[in-house]
Amino acid sequence: MTASVPLRPEVVATERAPKPAGPNRLVGLDRAELAELLVTIGEDPKRARMRANQLWHWIYHRGAQSFDTMSSLAKDLRARLEETSIIGRPDVSRALKSFDGTRKWLLKMTDGEEVESVHIPEEDRGTLCVSSQVGCTLTCRFCHTGTMKLVRNLSAAEIVGQLMVARDTLGEWPSPPGERQLSNIVMMGMGEPLYNFENVAKALRIVMDNEGISISRRRITLSTAGVVPMMARCGEELGVNLAVSLHAVTDDIRDVIVPINKKYPIAELMAACRSYPGATNARRITFEYVMLKGVNDSPADARGLVRLIRGIPAKVNLIPFNAWPGAPYECPTDQAIQAFSDIVFNAGYSSPVRTPRGRDIMAACGQLKSDSVRKTRAERLAAEAAARA
Figure 1: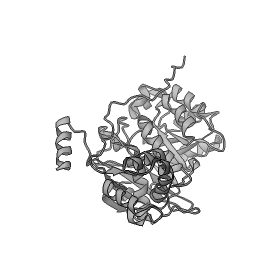
Figure 2 (figure 1 turned 90 degrees about the horizontal axis):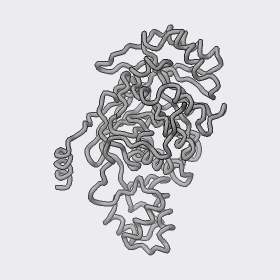
Figure 3 (figure 1 turned 45 degrees about the vertical axis):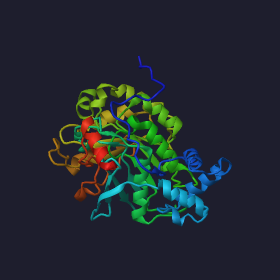
Figure 4 (figure 1 turned 180 degrees about the vertical axis):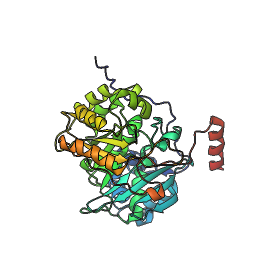
């Protein structure tokens, strides 16, 4: 019997993103929140909605970093905004560029916590890998982020801010209507997006708005390790592409390398995939499969994978394991990976082998990690007091 699915998201044992002290931060606010803020700083309520739309255009379409440049706003309103608010982006602690063009940013939030995001340029697209949490609660054994404790969820502002920093670097403001260096988003960075669904959903709605950043839902992929109760809601409310971090075809192996499987075993995960809203041959579910030598890379595993996904509109991304310091696994040989791919492909499923990108700057899949750590309450209060001083 399939377990009943709760209507509301699960609560993860973590703290919410802190509300920054000091000026109002505008990045991460939706239209209604911008209008409400404008009223609080003296704007006529009858004109607040129109002014909010103008402010939206400057922040999310033109990427403005100064109120002075917002020429369609009255000077007195710009002055009030300057006194009370900041546009707000994460600070760049470190920016690295790989020999293959991949970029990685270590971004510092207002409370000092840090996350990483990665831009991967390709011939036909440019993909930004976005983080949703500081650290991660899932402890997947092959993933460097999984060696961190979960510190906290990211706010919608901090999620959108990653994209805005990338666009700043790439010089892609105003939002270009045609070819873009940043054309696609994958929620595959640090953290489990479905354990921070409210903030992720708010951020993606801002990103998808066609009068702002304007990235289509068809160019956005959300990756989950298998938070089964939230998968249908993601499809219904956001309609983005789904990627599932599968990595094994039996519960005994997946229990070890993807521990969330103990809570939502493979049968439940596959049932949620089969019923994912909007999944069609044109919009296939992507199954991500990190290849681990001697663990999940045999021809028998490949045939098991084919049986597992049969009947699901699907494709498989085979990911050669990307090593990190102290990693307990090795990458299979190219021949073993190709043999696995051939079995899946011959069964009728696209099964490309992902070319590792950004390995030299630790930006490849599974290599992201920051120095953020969970702090005690006393440590947090001391840090917040120091920031206010």
